Length: 202
Image (cartoon, rainbow, N blue to C red; front, side, top):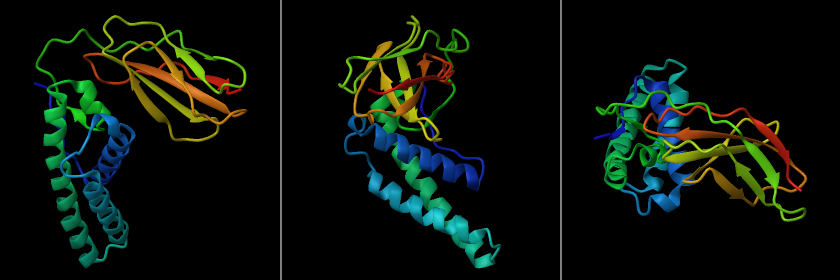
């Protein structure tokens, strides 16, 4: 059965991985009610490790030792949280991804690499409504669709998981240009995003 992978290769990967897990579980909080340990515990441990990581760049021996201790603490939190995610996912790699974890490799045969999502179209539902309809070509092997958007000119994407090839999105700033992309999520859980489409919210 596919399970959440909680291992990291080095200190930098641990920091990035923990930040990603915290971000994704916060974004998808409705999917993960009362996680154990709580996200507040992960946030506290992450903040402590981030500070120790920054101090250790000065190569002070005490700071390096402290970074190692805080790293072990953070890894333990990620490990304990992976058991909660595993219980929620029941082997579903898409739920594991929604929690920010990397799924372990499946022993099942795969249908191959997830194809690049195609046919992405973004349209305003009605002038003045601020609601967009995002549509991509249907892929029969998709278990979920990962929709992402960001304000044009910014770096960070905001992701939404949806079971349909069509999504209605609201809450964006009007008269602002946004960029959109979509990826299928099938048995191969590696994302393969569509070309980026830009749309003005009116």
